[in-house]
Image (tube, rainbow, N blue to C red; front, side):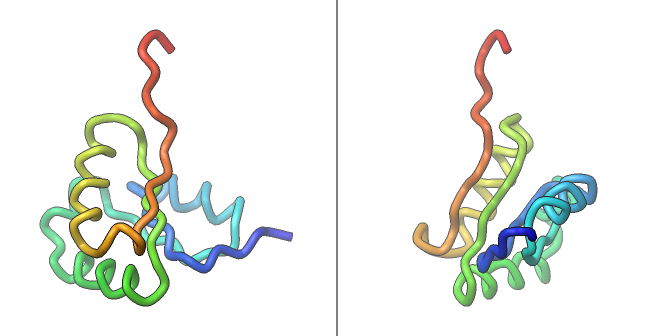
Length: 92
């Protein structure tokens, strides 16, 4: 049985979405990478979901993931948005 997650999980792409859905029972949306910067409707949706259910932003620890996390971070208060990623460790 998969663990249920109340918050909405935000990932970068469709492969990430598929991987997360194999592990947990949750609502998962993808940003389409940098597509999130142009999609105002999706940003409004994420903002509403953050206020209603909370968000977990699960992105890569690279520069693209950092930019996406920062963009989503501005949509709501810090209590409504959690960030999940594995920090980049030099030499690994």
